Image (cartoon, rainbow, N blue to C red; front, top):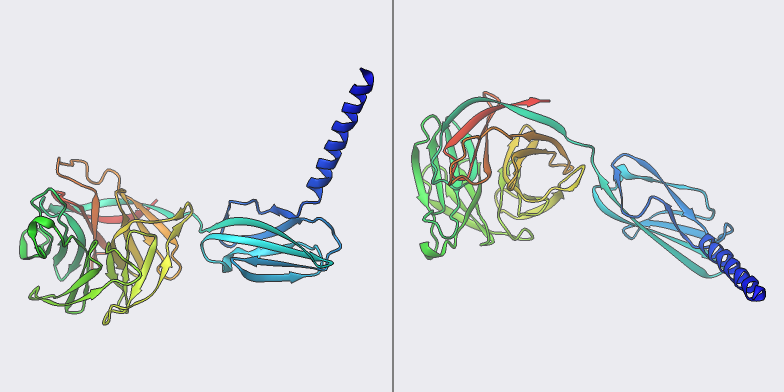
Length: 354
């Protein structure tokens, strides 16, 4: 009996030693841990567990692009500032005597936490409760507003010119498409480009162009890589458009051709469902679908630099009220006009840093 116990003990010890030896010879990343989130700007060591410290060469790459070639096991440092944001796949290949060993890891590069803002209500104005607001812009004392038409309602998509103080609709163009009952044109965001209004539609893969004064349709354009129409704004040189993803697409304001995009991230990851947009002093202000806050985006980097918490602004919601949607900017007063879908009130607010 003792013989078998001794043999069993020896076998267990051998397996343990063999297992440890096997683990020690495995080629893998020690840092960063796979799935780690890194703040852009960090200098992160790529530390490896090597099967053999006498290697012929080792090659490091990120998303298939080589970043370092070495013939020793010295630590390589990853400069996260130059990588952009989002998920990145790391790979290391070690070579010796014609043999190749491969190790993998993955990280997500994120920006710093955004600055936090709150608000001060300056004034409030009447708002049409039948306006399923999708786009909003202020110019020369009046508001331009686009509305959608949800199924199973009597609402119709429209383009409107609205008197600020009274909420009175001065001009209105209904957009019903082929059949009013089908709601086949669901109005989304709008923006003003000189004497034109550019308006998006949700699932039609096209937008319309209207004369700002007469509201007559003078053109239309097709979406390209961005298949849906959500929000749109104009920075004076290009249009910026969203499509439910975390991307801001750049469009030529004359041809409406897409010229690229930037992906939007905050410190928690990608920020999708960017809805109504407003361009203000070099930044894009966007409300996030179904959320009570506005994010402030740097359109060159995609970084969410600020977040305006609007909780408590609209406290007397009626039965018809839907989510926050509608941002307009009064540059003379440096205030925002904010409303929502079928809200009875439009608020003028001042943004206050916390």
